[in-house]
Amino acid sequence: MKCMICEQKCEIPLQGTGRCGMMTADARGIREQFPDRYLAAVDTAIESMPMVHYHPKGTFLQVCTVGCNFTCPGCVSEIITDHLGAIRGQFQEMTPEQVIDRAEQTSARGVMFCFNEPTVSFFTFMRLARMAKERGLLAGCATNGYMTEWAMSKITPFLDFVNIGIKGTSPEVCAACGIRDTNPIFRNIRLFHQKGIHVEISAVYKKGREDEIEQTARFIASLSRQIPFQVMRFMPFGNSDLDDEPRVMAAEALCRRLGQHLDHVFLFNTPGTGFLNSTCPECGQVIMARGFFGPMCANLYKYQSKGRCSCGYQLPLKGKIHEKTRSRLSGYFGGYRTVNAMSMIRAILGVLGVKDKAVADTVMADAVRSDLIDGLYARLNRIDAYFDTVDTFADVTETRARAAFFREYVGEKVRQIREQTRGVPKPRVYYCLGHPLIAMFGEKMESCLARTAGGDLTNQMARKESRPGITIDPREFGHMAPQIIVVADTLAWPPADVIAWCKNNSLSAPAIREEKIFGLHPFRSSTNPDWILGLMALANIIHPSIFKFDLKKEADTFYNTFYGHPFNNGRLPAFPWEEKQ
Ligand code: SF4
Image 1 (cartoon, rainbow, N blue to C red):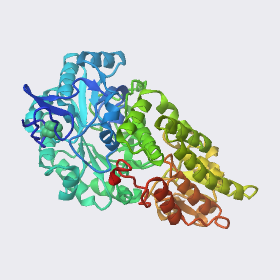
Image 2: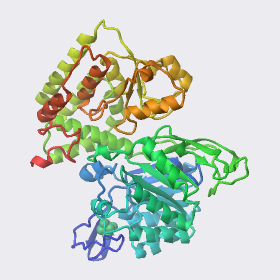
Image 3: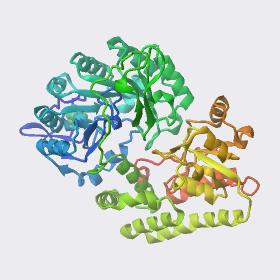
């Protein structure tokens, strides 16, 4: 039986499933496997979709299920797809009436289906959007736009706003995402626009793929210069290639070029960039100021009244700017927090040698179900607590010997570093989250490791806090006077760019004058078990006269010992042992 919901047009055998894993066929036709079941239903700001010019700061009930009709490498939801078994148990059944009741209880302006592809839960989403209309609420979604014309004709009467994600336009990108071409997507963008649905575009930008973004921008401009165009600077998730991440300065240069075609170009996944603001195309003033608020997310914190520039230009907003977002951030059965936590747990299970995927699924499902994830982030930010957490997973998977071995192997390196830095003068180290003025939180694992490696971490001197890092002002930076700057992200801010930015913005510190700016790539200092490589890299950086770890050798030994293959820039297969099974 052919599924006509998206352009994959899968032939689904009776009781089988289509490529998204969410549609099945029975005697009555194509139907959903999990109708009216959601992974999340949470009231939050529309900027988290993200939308920038639609009911800014408005509260919407965000809903999602799981699954996708694409197979793009590096997708943030990859782990959920890989471990669908683990997450299925978390579905909560809610009728359209119940979802809308919840939206009303939270004073939401409407519902938005995002985080995973709504097409794979098409009938559920359509029932919900229709119910939203009947009850006077708004409905929208973030989608890859690969629906068939039939599906478009069914859903568009109930849609008010849509964000269409473009992964790329080249044959290679289409092949990687498992689609024939992007023609249906561009056809549907035109259709959404013609039907008066508020359209915003988010285009994934990978290094070297500037032409594809410019080509997409030209198409969008042919519909209207005023359509907001969000450039999603690629952040490597899952098994994606770290080298695909573009430099921040290259991404900002691209946005400047796109501004020739479009009035409102935005840059996401880039802490500290000015391209997250809505600026006036007439006079260049900032009309709406936004900050980085996590992956694919923005936070509107300041704006000129009603989005009107003091020069008289009116931003093309739909809906009013809401004074305050009412967001409880409760009711999460999933979300990025869950995705990240599952990723950490998977890496720990790999170290413990858990080879049975069903066991891994069960552990993850239990973690998601219980309150474990709430405390997981805090527990994985301290070295001793990290070992205890690994022990907890070892208890449930009966791999205590492996946990003891991990504790002994890693603990020995930690002991060695602590021992050799005891009583040694500590240089002032500033750990930034990419942009030089975004400081890493003091309580993160990265900060803990910089201190363990014998640094006097200056980040605690920062006062003002915002998620996910602390934005400091140039005076605070001056007070810190770091002798060493460590840049947390992978390749977005190479040391040369940090130095250039600091010099161009009159930031001065010994670390800049002496060019002591370091990245850790390809080693990590976050919460995956290979943080020990990051610690050794930091020890080499902070105390070069004491430590001379051969990082390549250490990395290969660690990976061979715990994952059974050499270090490959820290990349783990989707399931760490699948290559060997
Ligand atoms: S919705 Fe799923 S089953 Fe239907 S055509 Fe698309 S991928 Fe195939």
